[in-house]
Image (spheres, rainbow, N blue to C red):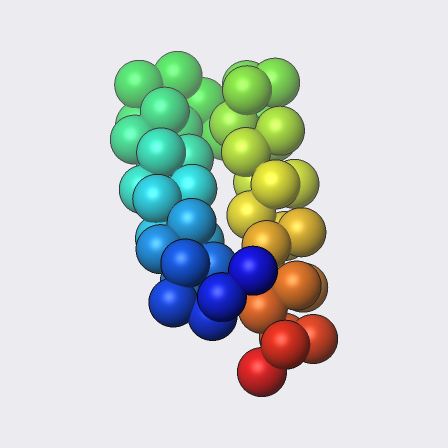
Amino acid sequence: MQLIHLQNEIENCRYEMISLAMKTSLSDIDVVELSQKLDQLLNEYQQIK
């Protein structure tokens, strides 16, 4: 996965997670799942960079 594409995915995931958390709560299962996805993306980014 290209670095720029990965950066875009990270930003989109972060935005989606924050937006959902503002509508629900930080402990909402969908927010937690997005947080885990964001963690995976960030780990992948760190490995590439």
